[in-house]
Image (cartoon, rainbow, N blue to C red; front, side):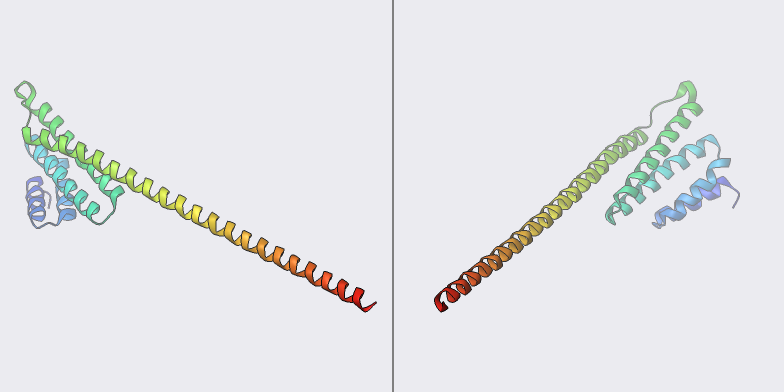
Length: 171
C-alpha cells in the first residue's frame, strides 16, 4: 500500500499480533511519505518494535543482535524526539513517555553490553582452564613417560648387572 497512514496502521496491527518483523517493515514503508505528526508516531513505534526484537534476541541467547537492535531502537526514539522538536518549534515540550523510553533503552544497552562482557570473560576463563588442564595432562604424560623410561633403564641396568654377576660366577 502507498498510503503512509495505512502502512502505519498495518504496522500497529502486526505489532499487536506480535508480528514484530512485519510491523517494522510496515512502519518503515510509512516513513518516507509521512506527515511530521505521523512520522513522530511511526518512529516511536519503530523504537518499540525494535525493543521487542531486543527481548526476543536476548531470550534466545543472541546478545550481540539484541545489542544491535537496542541501539537501533534508541536511534528511532531519538529521531522521534528530534522530529518532534523540529515540528513543534517554540511550542516544543518534552514527551515524558519518549524520554522514559530513551533512558530505559540506554540502560538496557549498558546492561546487555555488561552481559556480553561477562559472557566473554567466562568464555576466556573456561578457555584458560581448558588450556591449564591440557598443559597439566601433557605434563603428567611426560612424567609418566620419564618414569617408564627410568624404570626401563633401571631394569636394563639390573639385568646387565645380573648378567655380569652370572658370568663372574661361571668363571
